[in-house]
Image (tube, each protein chain N blue to C red):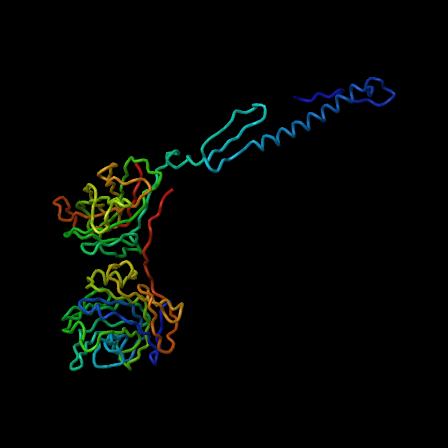
Length: 245
Length: 220
């Protein structure tokens, strides 16, 4: 409540226009009391902000219903709720080599670490990762960032596949990948310029049906003996990015 | 930090398994001072302290290098590699199968000689960095020495010569890896945690570039 002064302007003697009466003094005291009550009310508001750790609930209420109650589950505010897709980024050095038919490490130009994939023999590498717990089961896109060693024309056939490592349900002594997905991509007209090739993997067989919050391996291969792979020389892979669809 | 060998009496000895004898490869990064004197930068000793059976990397006064295989009766020598310049890192390695030793210099096969995979008289080889059998100490520096139980390709030797860590090259076949960082004495071997034997006091030297394995990055 807005405080209204008893007299707008007190006057000294000999004026009798503003006498000091019990009514005037009560008015002043009530104003002081109201001010203290308002201060106390502010403290009460602060006490009514709570966070329940167990449930992740954030609750804020105000006295006398001046503001509506706000309540939300803080832990549920994941990147997915904010519509930000997660990504897993592998540099060339994150690759794991099979025992045969592997791509070889190399350094390109100004110190760029790359993996060389041969032009005539199928070669591949593994990239080990962990599917985020927030994966909603909508599939992923695999983007390969690569360049040609020397070619300025021709196509590369890339093949990517997933191997879900189900806890207690996958024998790591044997390779068991999901559906292999292919993309035929033209190299850049400048051999040192990179090309980004994206291969979509729907959830299910194309991802070997992984569970959210589980381990997987991504197999990246140049299908060099495919007739559509026409680029001469090595394809140099710089980076692999998995993005949630 | 690598290790510097003074050419007088410094060496580091690394025990290597006899089981590598069927087919194996070894590689390290070598840095010399020219003229080095015609000395042995390293040697693969079978029956350590016995000069009768060994394979050693001989560096001549010009900085040229070749491997010599000595079976107790005759020496077989690979063709010389291009001369090394002073204070420059080079990839030096060899592959050995049951019959042939091939020298790789900076990722290129220089040549091969007939040599037995292992000399049957001795079972437990030692890799001696900085010298030959009991002499031939050489002023040089070694870093990133490793041994594999498989035959590496020229392209893999080329990657190693460019500084890729041995941890990135056929890790399933990596038997020994000695980074030679010079931080602790004696040096520790990476795969089995073995302790090297230091002969006198090889000191620290600036390490060459090493490209290490790297994990995935998760965003956000």
